[in-house]
Length: 398
Ligand code: UD1
Ligand code: UDP
Image (cartoon, rainbow, N blue to C red; front, side, top):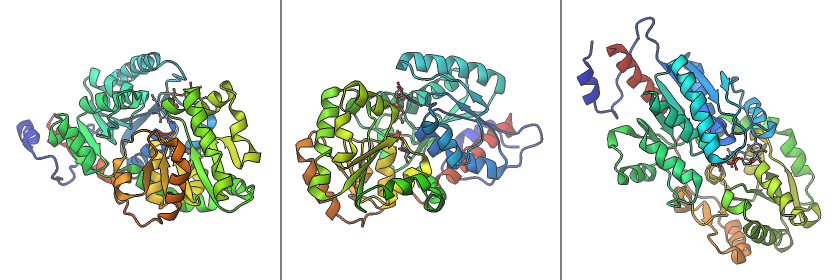
């Protein structure tokens, strides 16, 4: 049997052959998730666990709970029911993190997983990683190394802290690896794997072409064939009345100028703020905007893939538009997805909302001849192979 010192010295980027563990020594994995994008981006990893018959549990924090943000997405992805739901609900950032951590620490003490996997940059992600690290469990961060370099964003703080307490960092691209190296994170913890969003698209686009009846009914309600797909939910955009008003006032000019309509599935946060700030008149049907509740994942993929243009402040949609070959305008000052700017699929509005119509014109003309920087759709397979080999070796030596 290998000695522990050998294991620690092994260069981690070289994949060893699969190890057969003796009975009773099966590695146990825990997945912690809590919001819509985490469910979507973790689904390919869960699928891999299922295919390989691995021993795993899923803990849902309950940060997202409305059916269209949670159970509908689970159904679309054929996702197994979580083993635990912490039902944290909506609350202040501090209270959410504290509640999730406290419950997770108890669960981890009982379940004793060998590793906890988290994905992305939400409060659930930070709480999951921190609770694991506090209870002496290894942490794997899927989608590590993204940086907007804007510390006003809670997500940026969540990313930085999570990366610095993780043992396995799965960076989607070489840029995200560079970000981690610049912050002094050891190279032997970092793996460039691509992003599981590509796996999710490859696994679901065809199904979406057949099964997205609601998306098709929305498209059928338009007066034109061509539309812009819009989503908004970033705190900096929707929690400020001034900012939200600026954005909506400019967007509403698009239908008249370009003869396009706008499909706008509203995140619950956005719906709430539009109502609270009395801005509903900007998203009326008569103005060429079809606003709805958030849609399911299969409907979303369908609406994205058939759009002429995507406008968003979502991280996931910047990636999906790039992968699906639809130009994107990002309604933010910065992005932690600079790869999409570099390949030319995405344009960042910054503070130039007064020029939004020009951005739209340029984006509509740009075609879609760019290369997807997020990998080949085998990210989940790579991640599972890395952790499985490593943890099985450690387990074997125990
Ligand atoms: C969270 C993440 C964000 C991620 C987004 C994905 C943090 C800090 N933010 O933002 O990074 O991009 O999820 O969508 O973790 N609400 C409902 N039903 C729900 C969920 C939320 O009605 O199922 C409403 C509540 O009024 C809540 C508000 O939306 O107060 C915001 O929810 P919250 O989870 O705090 O932040 P998100 O904006 O969803
Ligand atoms: N999405 C969805 N329904 C919608 C809007 C988005 O299923 O109405 C999906 C979208 O396909 C993407 C993910 O949700 O995969 C992005 O989540 P979100 O924008 O909430 O969060 P972010 O990616 O910004 O963290």
